[in-house]
Length: 327
Image (cartoon, rainbow, N blue to C red; front, side, top):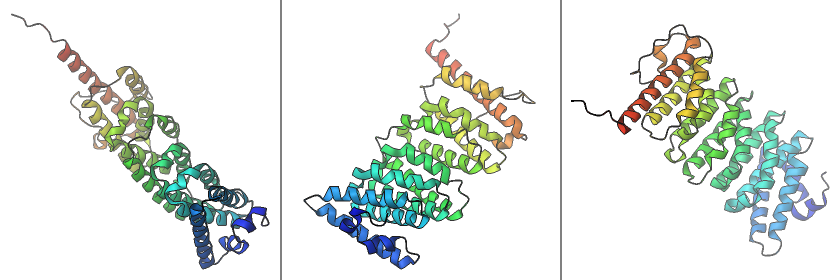
């Protein structure tokens, strides 16, 4: 593996060795050499792009996907450096950069997973909104790392998560409809870390009006409501906050598809028989302070939504078809 025919011509053997060296300063120096090497190839009028493709192939296939952990770490460090060298043009090589990095998210070695986070952070930083064309793949990977047993990996994934949220906030052309099925699929997870991660993303999308996440409510509502039964108080509060925001949005919207939303609410309301069915139409939010039993909360909130949406629907009909005046 170390004698790949392309290595001697494109990446000095000493540089490749130092990428996976135990000494940090050697790894840092090797990364800088690769970054500068890629920059030089970018400026080359003849064959530069082909050389870059070969460099990324060596770093990805021969190193990041190696059976040896140290080589995988070196490959990821090299790919992170290459991404910085490519700069704003890195998006042209995302199909070479992303697969090896995302594959390392599942590595048994926590340091490999950490370096994969670092590499993807660099890639996202330079490609900006271009990486959103591969967002579903990245999101699936992050969903795994958010519950990682290693705190260093978890911290790295949180930094990457925040960067992606910032990138999403800057985007005006991201197609949220392609993401909703992936979000719905992951809402079936019951782990607290994953639920916290998912609710954080829903809250982020709620804060960006032009994505109009309420239009996809029937796809995500069930997954969010059942989180009110989570054993973790923080998850229940987070779900309550997301639901309250969604309901306020619906109450001010004239674009409500009752045929899609009501079956979801009925399903939630009948998951288990609530102890009390009393529900006032003027209840304005699903405040957790109103309820003392988690097992009743899912039912009560669903019933409250049904009542409020029916009241809104009734008022809408009355406004559109007022009763004739009686004399």
